[in-house]
Every structure is written in structure tokens, then in C-alpha cells.
Length: 124
Figure 1 (cartoon, rainbow, N blue to C red):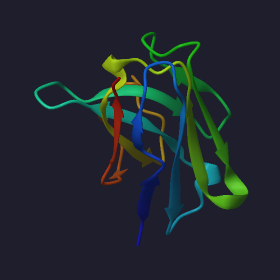
Figure 2 (cartoon, helix red, strand yellow; figure 1 turned 30 degrees about the vertical axis):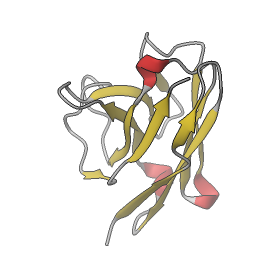
Figure 3 (spheres, rainbow, N blue to C red; figure 1 turned 60 degrees about the horizontal axis):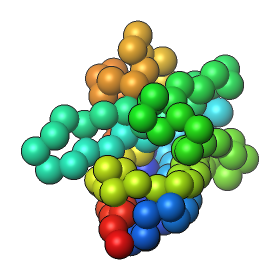
Figure 4 (spheres, one colour; figure 1 turned 60 degrees about the vertical axis):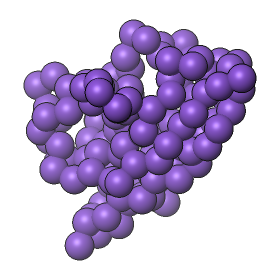
């Protein structure tokens, strides 16, 4: 049974940092595409950063230079290091995975499994 469990969310002041983790089980992460999406109420779900099985990464322009995705295949875990956080980064962050890299990786289509999300709130 495939399962994705996110952790590391919380509240932080603008300019602060958080590191999200997504622990995968039920499959071998090494051969899968995996990444992070976020969604604020009333808005569409948007891609943040994606890591494909060949080592390529895709990062949204809105977080480029501030967020970094990494994966530890031995631990079946993917991380999202978030620095210089802004109030507009506030959202529920979801982990998603699929066997194939979708044609447009940062769109929320073509991913087979999703976690339940973790809340990130950036506020002073």
C-alpha cells in the first residue's frame, strides 16, 4: 500500500526557514518522480518543486532561489528546504508521486499518489 506522510510544517515569521519531509512507503522511491505542491483556500493547487528519477529537478519561478528539493532514496524520503519565507508562501503543502514524469511536471496532473498535506503559515 502506497503511503506518503508529510511533516515539518508550522508557523514561522517572514524571512524564516522550514524543512518539510515526505516519507514514502509501499514502493521504491528511486524509480519514481516525486515532488511538492501547495494550495491556499480558494486558489488552484500549484507545483513548487519536483524531483524526477533521473535526477532532474523543476522549481517554480515564485520560489526559485529560496526553496530546494532533495531526495534520500535510501530513506525513501524527499525534502523541501524553504528559506526566506514570505507571507504568500502560506498554504497547505502536499507531497505527490508517480512512476512517470508528467509532460508538465509543475502542474498537478499525472501524479498517482498524494499525501494529506502539512500546513505552512508565514506571518508576523
